[in-house]
Length: 415
Image (cartoon, rainbow, N blue to C red; front, side, top):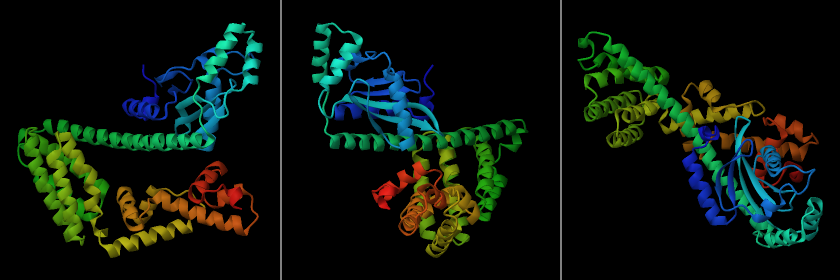
């Protein structure tokens, strides 16, 4: 049975990324599960590590040390550089989701100040090694890669950016896959329901369902429009007898109708026509009915929210959004809640926010919170914990991480 880790971080992507990372930096790279069991390994185990493990009777095992270091990395929110009981360095980065650790990436061993002769003597004495084994341990220590502190920091940053991008990407992929499966199941249910009716009910083109879909689109209700599309798609698939090419042509016609409906609502014609052209190209390149269906389903919010696609309306909407953010900086703010407050869909607001401000919603929110924190740090003597809470950060650790990201300094040093 494969590790639950792969439910959140695709095995193929991890394998490629970590293999390439090992080839570039030359250090041993391991992917371990939450109990320290190796899942993927790149590079041989250092003889020094094999010989030194267990030399100190009162020390943690290597797996226990790695797990402890991983928890430190979680608290820091970034890779953690640590020296183990054998005197060699490692870098660990946890793979977590919703505060549960599923595993971690471990780099090392490596040295930063050369081998510690005193430590090796202590290891040899504590484990009562014979002389020839001690000499082998010294020799093995000479083969451990040595890095400068600057190189170590840069490698840890590279690990953060590489694995961090995979993490965010896999979360987005999970969300998209769940939505796709739900969409397909709803169409499947509708097809099954239609098959129970007289054949005349699905042997004619579904004009009634098409009209319902257009009406919901004009009303600007994305949830109702998507539900209407599921019903329309099920009837269309039965009408075209699962012919992929025929379904493509009917859906291209539908895109034209949706774009006209949006323009009639007052949308910017140039913007809508450009988006529709891209969607039609996507439909033509799709390889299955499910893929074609999902392309339109996922883009319906473009048409339902189309009234806001003029520059004037967009600016007004984003101005309301930023005013709401500034008024509620100390509170928990989610994009979904803001979209609900403004009466638009979350995906649309996300795209519009980036287009108008040049920043993502989260980036803008964090920047504003950091600006407020800078003001409080410079002008008051409030404790860091109170400032973190006053600026909407869940805890001081996360506050410190975000503050340093945007200012280059920890909050205490900035003060």
